[in-house]
Structure formats: C-alpha cells, structure tokens
Image (cartoon, one colour):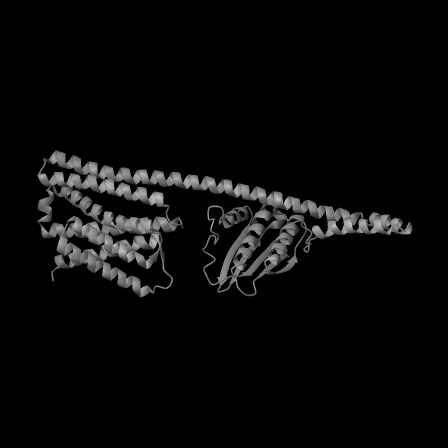
Length: 432
C-alpha cells in the first residue's frame, strides 16, 4: 500500500475523530457506556466514511452516508435530537468546506486550475493532509471554546453557526465549479480572495453574535445577582429587627416582671396569664439559637439552622469569633448565605444522615471558616447548580468569589467522596 492509499484511508479516521470531538463538546457521554465503546465508535465511523468515499466518491449519497453514520454514533452521547442533527451536519460541513478551501488556496499559490491539481497525486496528497489538519483544528477550536465557557451551546447559536457554514459551502463550491470551467488568472484570483473574505466575514459575524450573547447573559446575571442580594439583605434586616425586639424585651424584663407581680397581687390571674402569653409569643417566634455577638452573622446562621433542621439535616456549629468582624454586612450575607444554601441543597440529595458543620475561629488577625456537609458521590465541585431552573440559580459561587475578592482571603473547595468542604481564610483583618 503506497502513501497515497494510506492517506485516503486515514481520511475516514480523521473525519471520524473530528465528529467525536464535536460530540464531546456539544453533548455529554453516557455514564453506563464504557470508554472502549467510544474508541470502537471512532473506528466504525471511519470504516463507514472510507467505504462511502470509495463507493460513492463525491456524490450526495456519500455526504448522506457520512451524515447518517455520524448521527448513529451520536447515540453514544446523551443530548437532544436537534443537537445530534446539528453536530452531525456541522461535522460534514467542516470536512467539505476545508477540502474546497484548501483546493482554492493551492490553486492560488500554484497558479493551476482545480482539475490539474486533482490529477496530480503529489498535490492531491498535500491537499488531503492540509484539509484534514484544518478540519480537525476547527473542530478542536470549537470544542475548546465551548468547554472554556463551561456550558452547552444555545440551540439558536448552533443553528445559526450551521446555517452560516451551509451558506459558505454553497458559495465556495459554486466558485469551485467556476474554476473548473476555466477562467483567466485575474478572475481566478478574485474568486479565491472572495472565498477567503467570505470565510473571514462568517468568523466575524459569529464572533459578534457570541459577544452579544455574552453581554446579554452577563447583564441578566448581574440583574439577577443584584435582585438576589437585595432580597437577602431585606430578609436578614427583618431577622435582625426581630432579634433587636428580643434584646429590647430582655432589657425591659424587670419592668415586665413588676407589671406581672402587680397583677398577681391584685389577684388578676387571668390578665397575668394573658400578659405572660404575649411575652412568650414574642420570644418563641423570634428565638435565635446562635449568638456570636455579630448580629448579621447570628441572623444568617440561625435562619439557615432552622431551615436545615426542618429538612431533617443535622446542623453543628463551633464558633469562636469576635463580635466586631471587619467584614461588610452585605458581604457576610453573600458569603455565608450562599455557602449554607449550597450546603443545604447538597444535603437534600443525601439519603441517610445528612449534616452540616460550621467552624468559625479567630486567630490573631485572621478568621478561619470551614463549612463541611454531606453530599452524594457526583462531582459537586464542577457542578454550578443541580436545580432545574438554571437561569435563576447557580450564580451563588460567582457572588461569593466576587465578595471574597474584596478581602485578603484564600478560598478552597474539596470533595472526598460523600464529604464536601468549603474553606475560607480571611487574613489581615486588623487592617481591613
């Protein structure tokens, strides 16, 4: 087997790898499918593509066979049918467009028409190598951008991306057919320049579209974060107000006792009981189990402890801190509120003995914070949120990191099977 036949066979392997790169980026692997099945899938798809290329050459049947082969292999991944179809179409388009683009570029630099290049095995081999390198590079770049954004692509974005590729392929193939009919050198150069300009225009359009989407998403997240923050601050201010009522009640306890004693001395037992019941109602509806001296932190920990215990989650605290922490009240709300919300959310998925442990300890000018909670065996570190409404949840960690960035702090998360630990160290608090 000569090098030319080897390159032709490797075409199917590269195109198959290109398809699986896109699948990995646009969909999720199925948990129960072994890793060897994906390697076998690449090999099977390569055989399908090579067989189709050999039998049907450059016909529409060849393209259809490659598409349906890729669509079938996409069943190894979990995802919506529209994503499967679009990713398979995109893979076929990348392969087709890169072949024609390389052919046009070679025609430009070598000054020869397409038929002459295709009839020369050396130039054909060079074209195959360059087109497959370009194709796999494009697939890797697309995959990297999607993974870098840490999210699956929007269907509308992927649809537009595919449509732009279809338009480019139709126009470039039209130019290619024009070159085959025979044109002068000037017109050939203009066709090639226009083809390259078309590709550059598509790249710019998609970049601007992506930038617009990113700005819209960022604006929506900021509005949502601000609304969430305002709601948290309003809630904790109400809790703080209730706690202040309790402190006032304790302060006036002597006066209340004098009033009760006076009623008892006049044998107004019924009025005395009513007076006592009113006092008990105030203390029972606004009681706090946690008292560190920091009003905002007490309110948050008490509220989250009550919420956790209502959900049968054990809540333990070990608190040794100063009452006058030099940390802004809204930052305390963001950091500890979101951290405990995430801990409660994780514990809700644990079937047996869910727990949360909160450790706060002051040491010299530093504050050590450790929040440990039980969790399931899934990857909780890289999972933004497990809630179905992902548009309104999952930004708590972003808010926390933004709040922590205002201090000299160290932030670390760790998961050991069914135990999740959040560690924060505030340093230099005496200078804050």
